[in-house]
Each structure stands twice: as C-alpha cells, then as structure tokens.
Image (cartoon, rainbow, N blue to C red):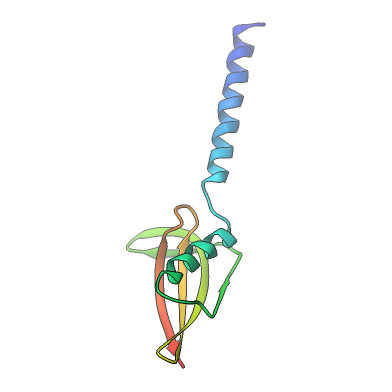
Length: 103
C-alpha cells in the first residue's frame, strides 16, 4: 500500500466522522419539545403542547438562530395561559418565549 492511499483513506475517515458529528449536533423537533416541556413542568402541570417540525430562522440581536417554533398551554389560577416559544436547533436553548393570551 502506498502512503498516498493511506493518507487518502485517513482523510475520508476524518471527513466522514466530522459530517456525522455535525449531523448529531442538532436536535429533532420532538427532542426540542421534550426540553421545553421539562422546563415548564418544573413550575406546574402542562395542559397541552405543540411544535412545528420544519426548521425556521429568526434574527435576534444581529444573530441568526435555526430552530423550531411551538407552544405550551397551562392553567394557572383558573386562567389558561398560552405560551409560544422558539428553541435553537443546535444548542437546545429556548431563544424566545412569549405569553400570548390568558382566557
């Protein structure tokens, strides 16, 4: 075996490992919803939840974030609260959370 074949094989191996690592570094929409629900459950029960499975892009403070939008419904003090969130696909951090309506 020649050295060039060995180096080429090693390069392909490193490139494949890098691509696989990049693919694993983002979370799925169901994993994102699980993260948000567990954060909300620390402060009480959840009545309902939803998440969009398509990736969206938002701009915050001059930065672009790729992730998912979704919502949580909970009842507090006999009033229903509707929250919408945006969670970063790469880090799993909740970037935006807004309270939409109390019924």
